[in-house]
Image (cartoon, rainbow, N blue to C red; front, side, top):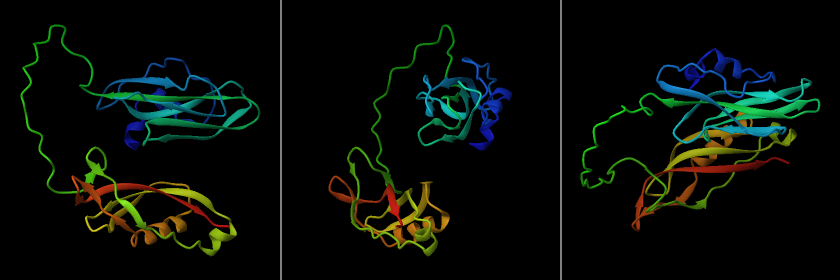
Length: 228
């Protein structure tokens, strides 16, 4: 996504952490691979705001606008998992407004004025994937946690009284074992991230099932850590 952030000069300006005023409807130039880009505001002012791109669009950038010149932004960043731009206020009194830059993929909008009628839909039998991990949902039931011991806190983590969470994605096999573990989002120091991943390699689950049969699935799990 990093290459997409340069949608236009306006989009680049929106990425700045300053709180200069942002126009309600900035003129944003379309970037490669996109047919239409526009700005979406959070619609209110508070010290923590999120501007969310609508369904069918992609978050490509963002920024913050402020009501008070003495205020500055202590955090301004994308959350691609939820298609949102986040703004967190710091400094003197005042509120902020988050602005997200949203783009539609080329070809997703616009049709000829007199399009030919669509052909009659054909009855096609949906094929069920026969290989590779499935996604949990519908008739695919999630795995059941059985043995998921948390890692011990490191000496530095205990000294710093680290508290936070990490979101893991893993594959849970038909035997209930884990593989392909990776971090999706983390609020922990790197040493504790590694400790959680090492611990996750030994976790055991009751396997996910489809129609009563065990299946291999992708599975996301949030792990909370408190080192006191």
